[in-house]
Length: 234
Ligand code: 6PG
Image 1 (cartoon, helix red, strand yellow):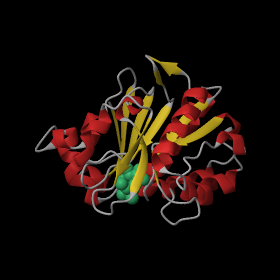
Image 2 (cartoon, helix red, strand yellow):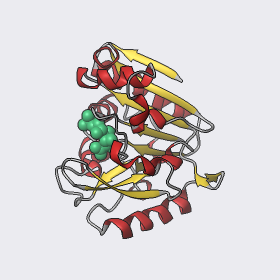
Image 3 (cartoon, helix red, strand yellow):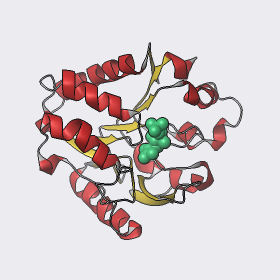
Image 4 (cartoon, rainbow, N blue to C red):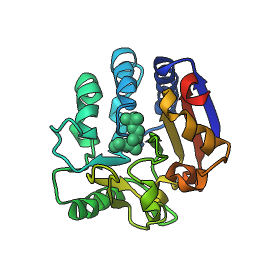
């Protein structure tokens, strides 16, 4: 596990962007699963503003760790946020964007998207193996859309699973824990004081850390990174 602690969210975004530039330089093609939620927005803005030329975007194929079951134009759409803050600004080939169709019936879409991933992402040990999976952390210890009351999704053998947000009841489509843990690299991108209690329990194996899905993210044969700001890592 590699721990990166930076002063503030912008410094975390800069540090992560540098990490992506290196990965991009040393690879012919990268299959990357993006995290959702609000934290990646600053990273996308920094990439679009300061790293547009430093990255060969034609090498990058983008997927998501999870998506909310809403249309792409909805304010909750993870795809919609990435499109507005990154794709539209750096010009990524449409064929390189592998969107989860949140507007479709969740179970059917989970199956359809699983096929798309299996067709395009090289497998190892019988499961798709992403080059990088970027994850966030919820204040309840969830990651992707694997919530504490749905821990079985960590061991699910499907590539994509359907989940339900415990408070809002919103349907989600998520990569299963098995596929996430099969990645070459997994990077948590976590900022802000509100995340500090769970970060502390998870990294120090304290308290109820076993009940948090994020604690069970351990690459079977890869590297785990935590990119944190000082507030989240205090
Ligand atoms: C989602 C996510 C989810 C997110 C965390 C943190 O679609 O909501 O993928 O796992 O990463 O909830 O969200 P914030 O970055 O908004 O704090």
